[in-house]
Image: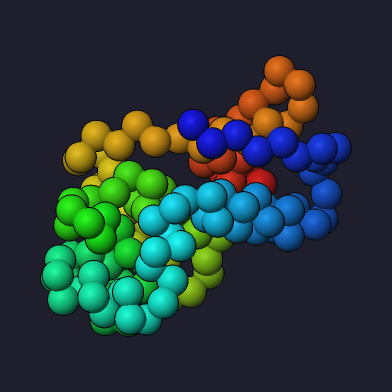
Length: 132
C-alpha cells in the first residue's frame, strides 16, 4: 500500500495541479516504471511480450506487463489507470476502462491511499472521482 501525506490539502481551483502532483509521485514510486522509461526498454518489452504488453500498442505507451515475466502487473495497470483518469486525450476513457477491466479479471488488489491528515486516508481512485 502506497501512502502519501499531503499537508493542508484543500479543495481549491488548483485541484488539477495538486492531483497531477499526487499521481506523478505515485508513478515515480513504482519501480517497474523506472525500468520502462527508455524507448529501448519499451521495444525490448514489445519484442519479448508482444503487443498486449502495452495498453496503447501502436505507440508503445502505457506498459502494463512485467518486463521479467510478461505477466500483467497490477502496479503498472494502476499507474496507467490513474494517469488516464486525468487525461482528456482521445481514446483515454476507453483505455482507462480497458485497464480497469484487466485489473478486475486478474484480481488486482493494489490500491494507493493518500493521507490527507493524521488518521484520514482516501483511496486515490476516490480522490480522482471527487476532484474531477
